[in-house]
Image 1 (cartoon, rainbow, N blue to C red):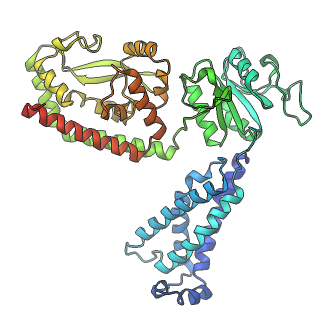
Image 2: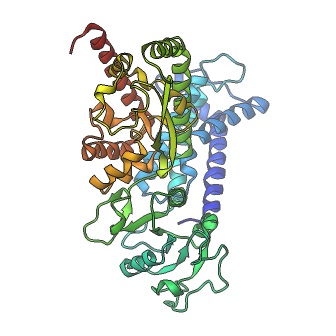
Image 3: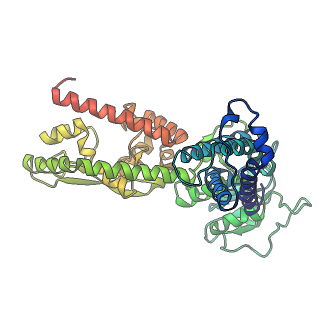
Length: 474
């Protein structure tokens, strides 16, 4: 793996220099002469930029293109074709953005001829640059390896299964580790190259705590990290996983832990690849912006309806308007979810499927039309939930579902949602295995556009349920 900071400097600085060079080349007289000889394109007006005008055009192009290339600044190992296609796609998006900006009438917009010429240059030189500096994937071996975990027994089991040399281990602060690197950074047994050979966990070097994981991955040029946590449903596990993905480090785990972690099945190995890739911060930001916009708009538009429902609940039966229930959150945490009360008081937390006779008249209508879910928009707004994700489960019910399905905790990899792939396909906790299959499928395929399609389908289903309830049709 290319050293992290060096790669980032080369990727960012080199791309910026190439962009400025492309705009400068597009403004040369010899290029203008050649451009006017082209059929159709040669008819575009050519406005050569100089001085401040050139600075503005070059600055605008640098800003837009560098912004589109943000995912490429992470030192992730990619093959030549994958790198070329990704850079080409991102550059094309930037060129479309520049073309859109060009339709606004301001003094120093990027001329169309300049955009065409510089765009053609960038579609060649930028992929070539990122291919040149890319971090190459290692074939036929995992290269430089460390173990990340907090369980000595699990570390020993990983050492028994690992087939490559191990530098050392990284662990949260505990009686088994220290916060800072040990003075003896090399193990007692080496293969002559300074890389520690496989040794028992007691003599394996501690390279530092999880707070130093970024520095360790770069300092030791690590290619593979094998996870050895006692529990995988913890912030430390997911934080370390996100760091590994950020630096292009392959993450593996022992097969015995596969029931709590999504993995790529490899029948021939005891160590398997962790199949969950944490979202980039850009993707998380887009999803969070969508959540805030959806929840805020929903609460604003539905505010008269919320007031009407509150009055109807109070008139229908004595008791509170809302009821709260503790649900399982991302990474196995908990949060309180709020819904409109649809049952007589003190009967909301009974076992699912055993309480239909306690549903109030207003509650029956609210459940049929899904209006009892509206207060959860507040949970989305404050960040406890997302619009789309695995349905949050009542914490007392969670233990029962885990007994039925060993891999149930795999749902905890993402924030729970108001709706999800399981909900639009009619899967519920009454069939936990089917629900889990849909939830895992969503986790592996999640994207903004996938979320949008799920939301549209859910809204369509809700409108249908409302219409059938009002008209009395089944």
